[in-house]
Length: 187
Image 1 (cartoon, rainbow, N blue to C red):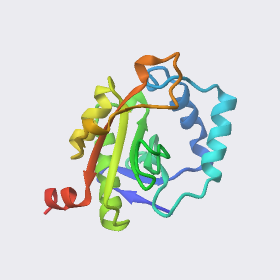
Image 2: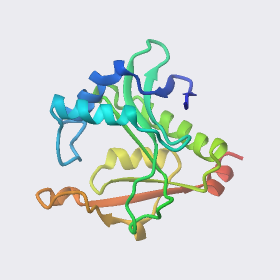
Image 3: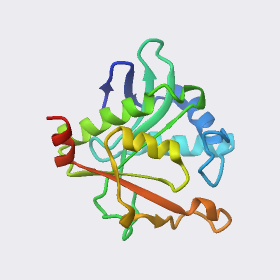
């Protein structure tokens, strides 16, 4: 089980007590501005149960961001395989995060992202990490840039899982960071 500490956060495995936070982040229209749907409580509970029951590859975990000072869970983050072949390699590993809107603009996503990148490159010895977001999600793209990722416009794509009813959410941009780039910037 992965546990990562930063100056202000503990990134830890998901617990039953995180169910309400998962529902909040699955139903808040502000948090989900760039998602095609919100989940009702029953659907959020089913997805939460699936996440808790899943056995990911070692190191590719769905983690909770918890404030060290108070123990309050404020969001989720992690590394995962996006399963978007042939748009991305079958071995691609994606970094992602979702925070409660009341905790935005405090640097928590960047702090967690940097810690996950360090884990990916120094512990897991991965060669590259990607991150994806909707074309117009400038907040997410700003976090990607702050944690050292670079845009890869040649890899941008229309997401096959976004319904035609949400054409504004189809176009996804891809950011990348290689282990060599990480080492160079942290030398």
